[in-house]
Image (cartoon, rainbow, N blue to C red; front, side, top):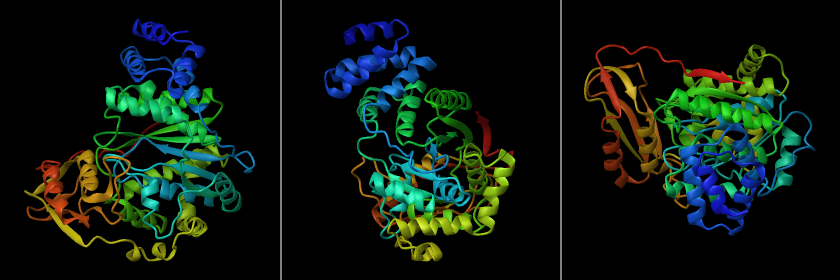
Length: 433
């Protein structure tokens, strides 16, 4: 078998078999296939696409390129969730303790933020002492003992995906549904859970800008999960505006705590309950409606918040910052972003707010960049709210005063103010099972 034959076959729109896909993944990961050959292959896939079966072959080949976490010694149906990335998306910090407090184990491996989207691991590391690096033995022990652990991904989960994604990133082959789905699902399947809820974001602050793209990705990821023998549900959620009121690591920890204490913004609570309910349903806790009630009850009676405290203690963090979020890292520089006219907020570009948060120090351009845990944005107004000229829309938080001019420049035009109130937009856009 020769890689040129595979390039020509896919270039001409023909279907690849399992052995051919495995040959490409193995050869490129091992260094037997050169970057320029792999780039040509990926470009052929980008233009010709892959069907569901080919995408499953690609996913499984990348999955089998490294370690696969074995969670079989943990009793019960182990659940996981994945978000395709958004702005202000701190749902894992809420959903995981809710689900675990209801008796369904959650062994969650999360990533760091890159670009305009945040990462759960960065957020948790704004809690003093919190350890995100767990051995497999520590992860399993914690989940067996308290039903919950959230840790960083190990270095050898789906190494083929890491190498292929790095090449896609510099060859203009990122935006392909099959390549995206295989990249996400190879890592999720390697994490070892029995059931996966996929939060597929749609809108300006999401990777999938249109509903059509998001539905295609969601359907393909659910099909891959089932093909691999896992239960899966995809929930399509809106990301035209930031989720919640806080963007940035310590700020998002504080807002997640608010939700777990029965407070916080409506949109964040609604999405969190929906995602948790789907995880509980896959975990065997009843119908979706009864699971929504179960999730809401765990927040109302404080058991979900107590589960978060328990996890933080277990992973070496200081739980006092959750009891009093004023103890979390606080930015020394705070600058208001002011409304330029009176009216209704009819658009709030989530991607630009994510870019601003990263510029202020809450995100990174490369994985080596250092995060400022106190940096970010606190929104004072949301989509649909009224605002007066000169009234603050948001407050920028940073430890790096020099970032403020660039941040304000990016925000220019990110909020549109109209004369009439906009139509109400649902936050839950659909479900694919």
